[in-house]
Length: 66
Figure 1 (tube, rainbow, N blue to C red):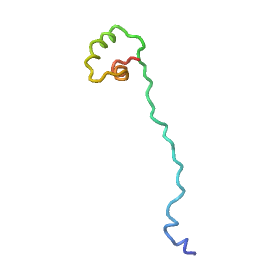
Figure 2: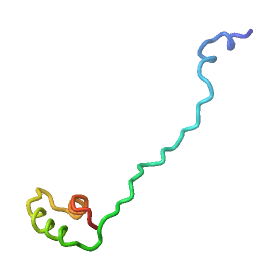
Figure 3: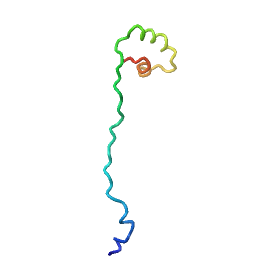
Figure 4: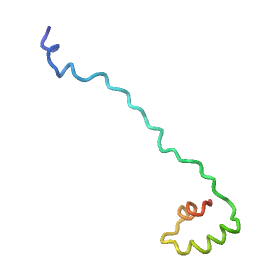
């Protein structure tokens, strides 16, 4: 045997596995209202002015509207 065969550094390790790419973040389908119903409209005018931060995203998420 040659010196290369006896050297543990050369023996260790194997073929590296191919990287598996992640599918990314999967979001669940949102089924938000496009038009207001009476209850949502009243809630909009009653609760939204009291929010600490009012953005389209926050209002959409909390009231389930687009």
